[in-house]
Length: 105
Image (cartoon, rainbow, N blue to C red; front, side, top):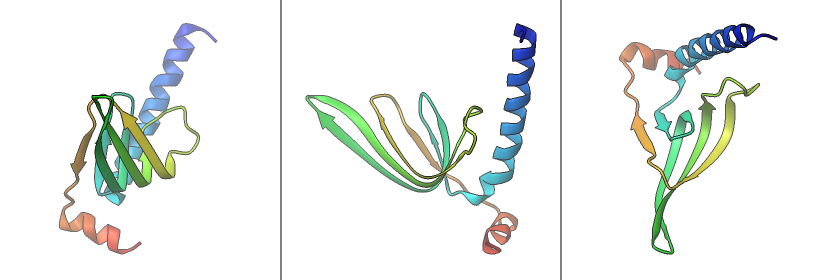
């Protein structure tokens, strides 16, 4: 496989991942972003912890989706994130039309 073939494969995989993200975002309540990963989740528990004077974040996600082109299945039951770096948690706001979709499930 040439370098160009690899680039084309990764570009196509990113496009597929973006389309999946666009399709599933309406199913989730939160966006969680770390230095290493991007998640969608329906439940987020966030704790700030101290260990020997260092502060770290302990975040538990349930019913989640992971942005990762190399995972065969991006839906996960639970995820635990422990990080000394920034963790951003954003609650999504969906329009009424989006909520109609959620009520069907």
